[in-house]
Image (cartoon, rainbow over all chains, first blue to last red; front, side):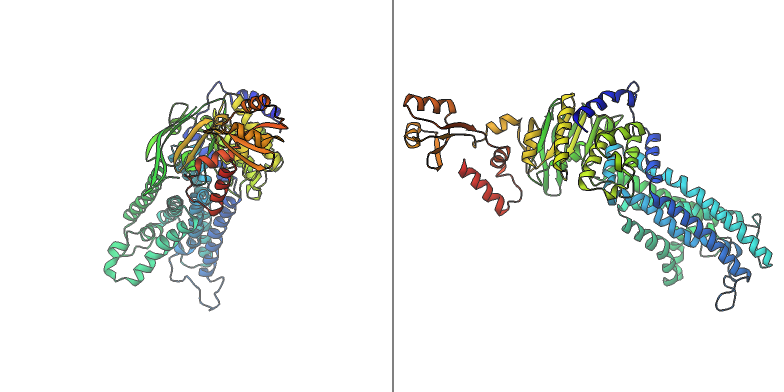
Length: 283
Length: 313
């Protein structure tokens, strides 16, 4: 690594870089950069595998228990009161936590290491970094969620049908909407997690707000606060989510369409908040 | 070329950088020197657009860094060596960074070779020593062949071999006509690498001069004479504006008279000289003298050192 070597390298550089066409930054190149970052971390693939396994496994176990072919320690079939769709998709309840962790990690990880400053120095317009993270994260998250949710739905309903207990088919009223809604909800929570991680610039803070404040607090609040609060609480992200991820409609919940619209609005708010913070704060 | 015009950064009531202006010329290594907390890193972060200036602007190649169509190819920077994801390999780190301006695997592998990390390129960067981290940071700064290279404390954690290497590298880059701007608080290192100096203290530029000029301006420059007739010589040289001290019998440290004049006077009077030397102040002495009043946090030892320096001079 003498200076001679360096000189040779520098001399050889124009051809390597193709200096005839000056290098330029573009959104596509930033997305590619984020893709290299995402795929080069082992945790990305470990968590995607865990997400797939938990959605499918919990769905099949719940279906088997509900069908009576497996009994709970108490002897009575669990989930007997739940709707078949909720039963076969019960893996999503656990999957949502993995999605939340993944999203926050993708959004906040660079702040923990300080790498974000290198990234921003390379892309001083900044917003393409967040777009790149969102696009690449959704590119691995959505296919995983679609495949695992559909497998748990079709395998789960097959188990219920073969056991002769209440089951549904894809064409039953509201079923397709609830299954697709579940997929959308998981993806949306991933986006909110990523944006919260970037906004709060820390994995711990992002996870605390997302899991505590967004996923659990509304449920807790509904249970503790008087019913009169329901008209407000139903607009919170997780409550809005319940209205389009289940076939059962509850009076205290929004309608399918309204719930979906409110949830999408939360997702958009998170993205806008993260972009504004990224553009205006010192890195 | 790197230009800074009236750059100011305030954090509440604290002024970190106070309306500074300077130009870093291509073709020479320019050192950015200052005590800790003087505003070196803040200035560098503002040049990169990481921190928004309260007022003023920084121009890289005549325009704001953020306005560059290919930022990494305009200015390559090393700010924090350990700012890499511990789980990602050095090679993937550089690939991801290079992808933003279309720099591919060929160039990445070549640079890993240049900085001496080829053998560990595929290992997670979390296992790297500080010195290896610096080499990776330098590789990322050079990735897109930038005309301006800006390094914050690049020799931190490097072994003597690595220090020698980076010194050669920086001079080489400057010789190619690039603008090389590096900060350091290591005086001896700066003295051997930089030709031009910008000194910052308490957020203000307190010197912008060539390294030689900076040291020459120091009052620590003096002429040392060893002579058996030291006392006679002293009496001949004593005058207004001349200060003569003696650290041991037969040795004089003379300030305010050039060596040639001392030699002439001795010859006129037939006094034997055993040694006649012009002693240049070290950068460290010159720096201490200049920044004595602008060090943000005076430690007891720092004060003692500067006092000693003054007395010695």
